Image (cartoon, rainbow, N blue to C red; front, side):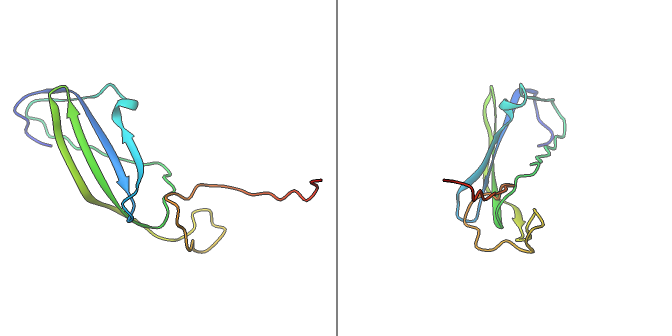
Amino acid sequence: MHNLDFQLDHVFLDCELYNERGERVIHTKTKFISKGFTLKKQSNVVFKYVLMEPRLAPGQYTLALYMYSDFGKLLWVEGIKACKVNSKDPSGRNEYLDTVIAAVVPEYSLELDMNVD
């Protein structure tokens, strides 16, 4: 956003990430991590959205953004091309992930206990 004609207080940004099947896989809200932003009059603003280790399944993803304040709805954009996740296995155990039908690929382990009565 740039060159606002007035100052906005308590600005919040919700982000939703959708997989190629249209399923919402991530929904984040700034109100969970801050008390909102202040956008000053005549200022240029860039929001940087970073997901740390989202562990997404392979595929194409789109983003939806919803920005609001005490003033009301400021922005609502859907279908933004976000990223494409390749099928390389992040755990390093396999060269590639195949036939993953889940929305995320968590880090996991599995043990077999043969001493069960």
